[in-house]
Length: 102
Image: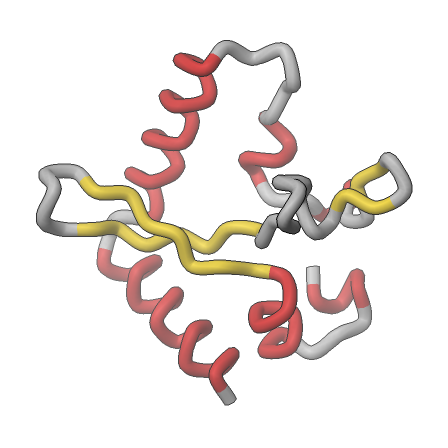
């Protein structure tokens, strides 16, 4: 995605992404990388009524349909959180976060 947007990865992470988390038991959290949103609630990549990263958009964006029920959206979020919950992805997120802090 950084290459597609012609920006350095740390700048992309710092400017366009947030680290979100899902809790399983109210105590522990699994961290995921998610596109940031504007105050309006719109994705930062949604520009001029179109996705600015359509060709390289992340999995959840490719699977998102505006007609999906809340249950479907929550189930998809849970599945993605599960995939990110293992040590290797969590370690990668920590590295990305440190790089973004500069």
